[in-house]
Image (cartoon, rainbow, N blue to C red; front, side, top):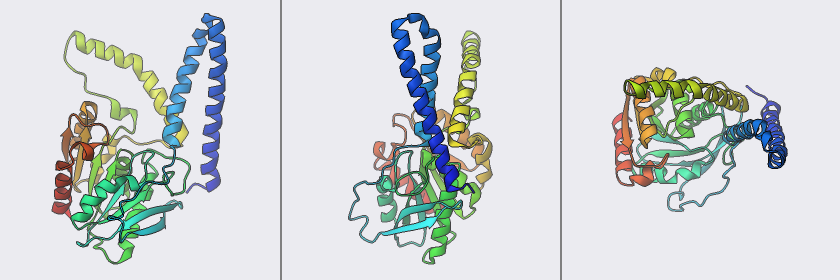
Length: 323
């Protein structure tokens, strides 16, 4: 368990690095404008600053503390709090249902539990109790660093502990629906908690460079070009992964390596767009107990908005069959 001082110290360290890189980039910009030869060292610095900024915004997303609530949905809601398995104070909204089963909803990066109201509405209408969770470093919950689902798994496991302790639910009928960051947190949480009986994972992306490796397409000249591009870009991808791991203070295991440990518990993968579909086909095959719904023309994490009728039908039917 990490101390609060260590958690905050990582944020301050990362912020200091970003400010130093930003200052260096501004200095480099003044030099390259005056003497073009300075592009030779300025361009790598600009690229490093870009990579570091991406890592920083993923590790420390802006908080969405407030969002309009649908009063009809929250008429009987409870504003609850509990402690993550590593000691952070977490907040959530609990919406009581009627069938004894419960679903934990885990949101995207930079979101909050309230952004999952659309998912909560159709699941609550189907009789499920709903827990709209604010993951660490999001919404009202404690924490300074988002870790791409690694430590968020402890938040999901703690949410399941909370539901099982309530006493008004069937402890063997709990599922999790996660979107993007929430999908990473959900499947890793299922590795920690056997009481999670079913998973819906929308927009599940890579956690490690091994997840990004694609089968080589075609033969002949096209295959040779693909191999060459892969060799040239692999060091940059490796450095990008190392930088991200440095900023979050974690070393994620590949999805492709560990998701099979959830079997035989069922998983519904929802993939939006060609690249996400390609990756989730491999995740689904590795899971051994998954099924995949492909939305070719939908944007990332926008399955419900792209298919407002079919999405509730499929997700509800999946949970009904399992829970």
